[in-house]
Amino acid sequence: MTRTFVLYQLVVLTVAAVLLKEYFSASYPSNVFPMIVLSALVILVLLDLLLTVARRSFASLDLDVMERSVAMRAACMMAINITYVSLYPIVGFYLTTFSFLCISTAYLLFVRDGWQRAFSVRSIAAVVLYAVLITTVIWVCFSLLLRVPVPVNPFI
Image (tube, rainbow, N blue to C red):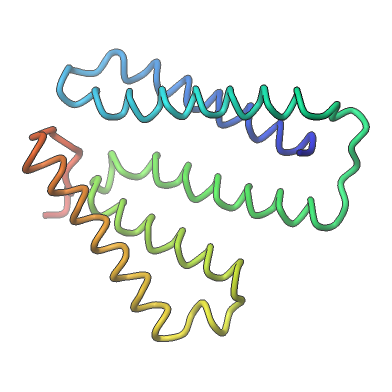
Protein backbone atom coordinates (compact mmCIF):
# COMPACT_ATOMS: atom_id res chain seq x y z
CA MET A 1 0.00 0.00 0.00
CA THR A 2 1.34 3.38 -0.90
CA ARG A 3 1.02 6.85 0.49
CA THR A 4 -1.32 7.60 -2.41
CA PHE A 5 -3.59 4.73 -1.44
CA VAL A 6 -3.64 5.93 2.18
CA LEU A 7 -4.59 9.37 0.87
CA TYR A 8 -7.47 7.84 -1.13
CA GLN A 9 -8.60 5.98 1.99
CA LEU A 10 -8.65 9.22 3.94
CA VAL A 11 -10.61 10.98 1.17
CA VAL A 12 -13.19 8.17 1.03
CA LEU A 13 -13.44 8.21 4.81
CA THR A 14 -14.00 11.98 4.85
CA VAL A 15 -16.64 11.89 2.10
CA ALA A 16 -18.47 9.00 3.77
CA ALA A 17 -18.40 10.76 7.14
CA VAL A 18 -19.79 13.97 5.63
CA LEU A 19 -22.56 12.08 3.83
CA LEU A 20 -23.33 10.14 7.00
CA LYS A 21 -23.69 13.42 8.88
CA GLU A 22 -26.11 14.66 6.21
CA TYR A 23 -28.28 11.55 6.40
CA PHE A 24 -28.75 11.97 10.17
CA SER A 25 -30.98 14.95 9.38
CA ALA A 26 -33.12 13.04 6.82
CA SER A 27 -36.48 11.53 7.66
CA TYR A 28 -36.70 8.03 9.14
CA PRO A 29 -37.71 5.58 6.42
CA SER A 30 -35.53 7.07 3.71
CA ASN A 31 -32.35 7.43 5.76
CA VAL A 32 -31.99 3.87 7.09
CA PHE A 33 -30.34 2.18 4.11
CA PRO A 34 -27.90 5.03 3.27
CA MET A 35 -26.87 5.21 6.91
CA ILE A 36 -26.24 1.45 7.03
CA VAL A 37 -24.19 1.51 3.82
CA LEU A 38 -22.20 4.60 4.79
CA SER A 39 -21.57 3.26 8.30
CA ALA A 40 -20.29 0.01 6.82
CA LEU A 41 -18.10 1.99 4.41
CA VAL A 42 -16.62 4.04 7.24
CA ILE A 43 -15.93 0.90 9.29
CA LEU A 44 -14.33 -0.95 6.36
CA VAL A 45 -12.15 2.01 5.34
CA LEU A 46 -11.04 2.49 8.94
CA LEU A 47 -10.14 -1.20 9.23
CA ASP A 48 -8.31 -1.11 5.90
CA LEU A 49 -6.46 2.04 6.92
CA LEU A 50 -5.44 0.48 10.24
CA LEU A 51 -4.28 -2.71 8.52
CA THR A 52 -2.31 -0.67 5.99
CA VAL A 53 -0.53 1.27 8.68
CA ALA A 54 0.01 -1.83 10.82
CA ARG A 55 1.49 -3.90 7.99
CA ARG A 56 3.97 -1.39 6.69
CA SER A 57 5.70 1.75 7.53
CA PHE A 58 4.66 3.68 4.46
CA ALA A 59 7.37 6.32 4.91
CA SER A 60 9.85 4.12 3.05
CA LEU A 61 7.65 3.27 0.08
CA ASP A 62 8.30 4.55 -3.41
CA LEU A 63 5.79 4.61 -6.24
CA ASP A 64 6.77 2.50 -9.20
CA VAL A 65 4.96 2.31 -12.53
CA MET A 66 2.64 -0.48 -11.43
CA GLU A 67 1.57 1.36 -8.29
CA ARG A 68 0.92 4.52 -10.32
CA SER A 69 -1.42 2.63 -12.64
CA VAL A 70 -3.24 1.15 -9.64
CA ALA A 71 -3.55 4.63 -8.15
CA MET A 72 -4.91 5.94 -11.47
CA ARG A 73 -7.50 3.15 -11.63
CA ALA A 74 -8.54 3.87 -8.05
CA ALA A 75 -8.86 7.57 -8.87
CA CYS A 76 -11.03 6.78 -11.91
CA MET A 77 -13.34 4.55 -9.86
CA MET A 78 -13.54 7.23 -7.16
CA ALA A 79 -14.54 9.78 -9.80
CA ILE A 80 -17.23 7.42 -11.13
CA ASN A 81 -18.53 6.83 -7.57
CA ILE A 82 -18.55 10.52 -6.67
CA THR A 83 -20.40 11.31 -9.90
CA TYR A 84 -22.96 8.61 -9.08
CA VAL A 85 -23.57 9.89 -5.56
CA SER A 86 -23.87 13.50 -6.70
CA LEU A 87 -26.23 12.73 -9.62
CA TYR A 88 -28.78 10.37 -8.14
CA PRO A 89 -30.74 13.06 -6.23
CA ILE A 90 -30.96 15.06 -9.48
CA VAL A 91 -31.53 12.39 -12.12
CA GLY A 92 -33.20 9.73 -9.99
CA PHE A 93 -31.92 6.71 -8.14
CA TYR A 94 -32.78 3.92 -10.58
CA LEU A 95 -31.62 5.68 -13.75
CA THR A 96 -28.38 6.76 -12.10
CA THR A 97 -27.83 3.28 -10.64
CA PHE A 98 -28.31 1.67 -14.05
CA SER A 99 -25.88 4.16 -15.66
CA PHE A 100 -23.36 3.73 -12.84
CA LEU A 101 -23.43 -0.05 -13.16
CA CYS A 102 -22.96 0.13 -16.94
CA ILE A 103 -20.09 2.63 -16.76
CA SER A 104 -18.23 1.06 -13.84
CA THR A 105 -18.55 -2.49 -15.20
CA ALA A 106 -17.41 -1.39 -18.66
CA TYR A 107 -14.46 0.43 -17.09
CA LEU A 108 -13.45 -2.61 -15.06
CA LEU A 109 -13.71 -4.82 -18.16
CA PHE A 110 -11.56 -2.30 -20.05
CA VAL A 111 -8.92 -2.38 -17.31
CA ARG A 112 -8.89 -6.17 -17.33
CA ASP A 113 -9.25 -6.95 -21.06
CA GLY A 114 -8.43 -3.82 -23.07
CA TRP A 115 -10.55 -1.93 -25.60
CA GLN A 116 -11.24 -4.64 -28.15
CA ARG A 117 -12.62 -7.26 -25.77
CA ALA A 118 -14.27 -4.86 -23.31
CA PHE A 119 -16.32 -3.09 -25.96
CA SER A 120 -17.32 -6.00 -28.12
CA VAL A 121 -21.01 -6.61 -28.77
CA ARG A 122 -21.03 -9.58 -26.41
CA SER A 123 -19.39 -7.64 -23.59
CA ILE A 124 -21.71 -4.67 -24.01
CA ALA A 125 -24.74 -6.98 -23.94
CA ALA A 126 -23.42 -8.66 -20.78
CA VAL A 127 -22.82 -5.27 -19.12
CA VAL A 128 -26.33 -4.04 -19.95
CA LEU A 129 -27.90 -7.32 -18.81
CA TYR A 130 -25.95 -7.19 -15.54
CA ALA A 131 -27.02 -3.57 -14.95
CA VAL A 132 -30.68 -4.36 -15.70
CA LEU A 133 -30.65 -7.37 -13.35
CA ILE A 134 -29.00 -5.54 -10.45
CA THR A 135 -31.21 -2.46 -10.89
CA THR A 136 -34.29 -4.71 -10.95
CA VAL A 137 -33.18 -6.47 -7.76
CA ILE A 138 -32.64 -3.10 -6.08
CA TRP A 139 -36.07 -1.89 -7.26
CA VAL A 140 -37.77 -5.02 -5.94
CA CYS A 141 -35.98 -4.77 -2.58
CA PHE A 142 -36.56 -1.04 -2.01
CA SER A 143 -39.86 -0.30 -3.71
CA LEU A 144 -41.79 -3.54 -3.29
CA LEU A 145 -40.42 -5.25 -0.20
CA LEU A 146 -39.11 -2.45 2.03
CA ARG A 147 -41.29 0.35 0.62
CA VAL A 148 -38.47 2.83 1.09
CA PRO A 149 -38.86 6.06 -0.89
CA VAL A 150 -35.92 6.77 -3.20
CA PRO A 151 -35.26 9.85 -5.34
CA VAL A 152 -37.41 9.41 -8.44
CA ASN A 153 -36.67 10.36 -11.99
CA PRO A 154 -37.76 14.00 -12.53
CA PHE A 155 -38.02 13.46 -16.30
CA ILE A 156 -40.99 11.07 -16.08
